[in-house]
Amino acid sequence: MGVYGLWDILEENKIGTTRSLKDLRNETLAVDLAPWICQSEAVGSTSSNVETYIRNLISRVVKLIRGGVKLVFVIDGKPPLLKQQTIANRSNTRFSKKRGFSRITCSRNELDARLKKCCEVLEYLGIPCLKADGEAEATCAALNLNRNVDACITNDSDVFLYGARKVYKNITFNKQEATVDCYEMKNIWTKLKLNRDSFIAMALLTGCDYTVDGKHGVPGVGKVKALKLLNLWQGKNTLQALRDWKTKPKPEIPCKLLHCTVCKHLGTKNKHFKGSCDDCGRDCANGKDTFNECNCPWHLHKNESIEDEIWLKAQQVDGFPPEEIIQEFKKPRNVKEIPRAHAPCLDGLMKCLQWTPDFIMKIVLPLLTYRALSLKEKSFVEFIGIEKMRILNRREIYDVKWLVLVRGYGEHVSPEPRQLVKAAYPDVVKKFSEDLEKKRNVSKIQNASSGSKEMTDFFKQKKRKFVPDKGNTLDNQSADDDENNNLAKELGSSSSVIDDNDVIYVQ
Image (cartoon, rainbow, N blue to C red; front, side, top):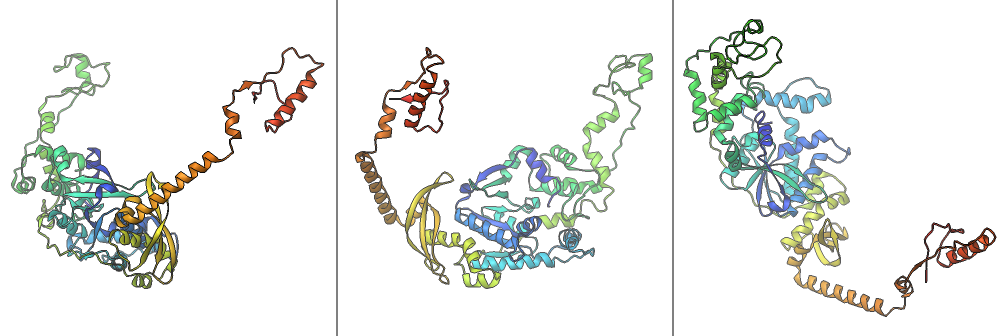
C-alpha cells in the first residue's frame, strides 16, 4: 500500500503522465517483484497445471525486453519489526482466508515461496535478480537515488519516502501499444511543493505500512488535512516541525458560541428575527440558509490554525512523531552491485517449470529471436530468411523464418520489426526488397498485357438509365416485362421481374 492517500493526491493533481513503451527504450528499471505476484494472485489461475503468476511474469519480461528495456528485479528480504502487524493482516487476507484458515501469522511463507520460484525462472531467463536487506521498494529507491537505474516499477507509494526520483506504475499491454504511468519528484515539487520529508510527514499523519495497524496515523487526519498542513509549512523543515510538537504548549482555543442557522453569524435565529443581525444586518426570520464568512474568534482560529487542530489530535498518539519510523525511511541503504544479464538456460527452465516444451517455447521464443537479432546470439535459434512483409498494428513487420536448435523444435516463423531485422541483416533485407520490387513490376506488366478488360471497358462506357415507356398500356405491359426480364438476365440480375423503380445500366 505505502502511504495512505498519497496516490490519490498525485492523481487528483494530475502529476502523472502516460508514456509509451518506446519512450522507455534503453532505460534500466528496478522492478519490485512482489506487487506483480499479488496482482496475478488476485486474478487467479486459469489452469491447474500452469502457474498464472509465472506465466504473466515471463510475458511481461519478454515484452519489456523486446521494447529495449533493461530489467533488474528486487525481492523482499527480512521485513522490519515495525511492519509485523501489517504483514500479518495482509498474509491473513491474501492466503489464509482463501484456504479456510483463520489463524494470523507474521510469516510470509506462501509469498516467499512464489518469490523464490520467480527468481529461479528469472535466473534461467538471464535476468538479474537482487534480494533486498529489508523492503524491496527501499532497495529500488536506493538504486534510483544513486543513479544505478533510471526508474522504479512499483505500486507502493512509500518508494518516494525512500528517495526514488522516478516511478512507473500501471503497466498496460495491449495489441496497439504498451503504456505506463510515470511520476517524477521534480514534477511533484513543481506543482505541489512537496519533497521527500513532506511525504514522510504525511505518512506519519495519515498512516503507512509502519504505523500501528498499517493504515491510520493520527486519528481524524486524512489526506485533505495533511495536505493543508504541509502547504502551511512550505519553506520549513517539516520533520523538525513535527518534532517540535513534543515541546509545544497547548494552544488557547476560543469557545464556540451560538451561531445563527441562517446567516452563520453570532446570535440565534430568534434573536435575529426580533432584531437584524449585527454583522450582516439582515432579517433571518424567513430567510434561506446562506454561507457568510464569520469573523468571530472561534472561526478565525479555526481558519488560521489547522496546525493546532492536528496537534490536539496527535496528542492521542503516544510518542508522536515516532522517531523509529522516520529513521526507517531516512537511513542510508547499502546498494549491491547489479549482476549482469546473461544468456538463457532453456533446459533449466523446462526442469524448473515442468511445463510442456511446446508451451514453454511458445512464450519464450520471442525473447530468443530478439536476442538473436539484437545480440547476434545463435545458441538457440538460427536465422533462415524473410518470408514476407506486412503491416501489424500500424507497423512494418517481417515474418522471419527461424530454425530452433532446442530439442528438435524445428522451423518457426515469428513477426519481427522491420528496423530490427534490417539492423541485424542489412544484406538480406536489401535483397528481399529488390526481389519484392521485381515481383511487383512483373505483376504490373502481366496485368497491363492481359486481355481481361471486358469488365473495365464495360464500366468506362457511357451509361444510361433504362426507363420503361410511360405510354405503355395494360395490353402491351406483359411484353415490356418480358423484354425487361431478358435484359436483366443479360446483365446478371437474379430477379425475374424488374420494377419501375429499379435502376439498370446498359451499353
